Length: 257
Image 1: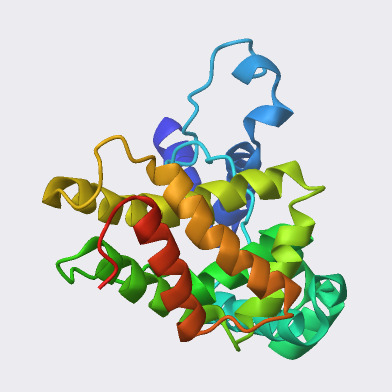
Image 2: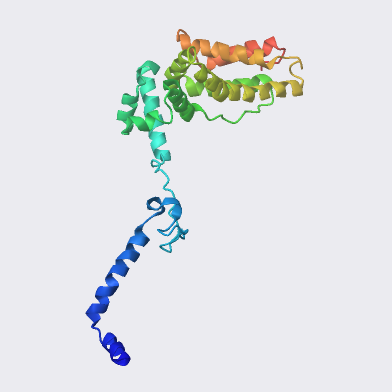
């Protein structure tokens, strides 16, 4: 009887075996798909701790928020050129995000996000066009060095879009303290540091006294040039450069030729 019962069980049809296995498979699938958030404290129904890696692939990592596509160097350059063009044509008061965005063919947020201040956008455009410092001349004389260096500066800004950009920036820094600090750090300080080297050379050569105040010398040079640049009543050109250098060099006791 016992043998007949085993044989009878062994003779069970395949379909019966599949039917009996089906609930077990379903239960396993539910268990595998159930995450820790569906079971309290990671425990099973019997209260026993359950393995965190029930599916065999380990716990999921928290998703990081997607960041926007990084700006390309070409996009930045197009925006800076468009900004310089608007300033040259309409001044800093005409420098609007809408105008720049239209010319650069970019969205307004592409311009506003990295640089929300109008003054900072103007300064960035100015530095992109005129921020490169040329090599210092070494003519062998104090007056010759000043004449050559100042002539290059005047040639770069006089009669170009730099006039409108400089005028707009100088006006803007009067009521924008952050822009004024950036202007001093990124424009004024590097230029004065470079020209101070020429004053030091003059002292080393014995052309001018050691007590010569380089700051005053540079104030006289650039003060005169900026005055003509902003007032626009008299030309800022090479003859003026020669005149102002002769006056400053003679004032500190250096030869003028």
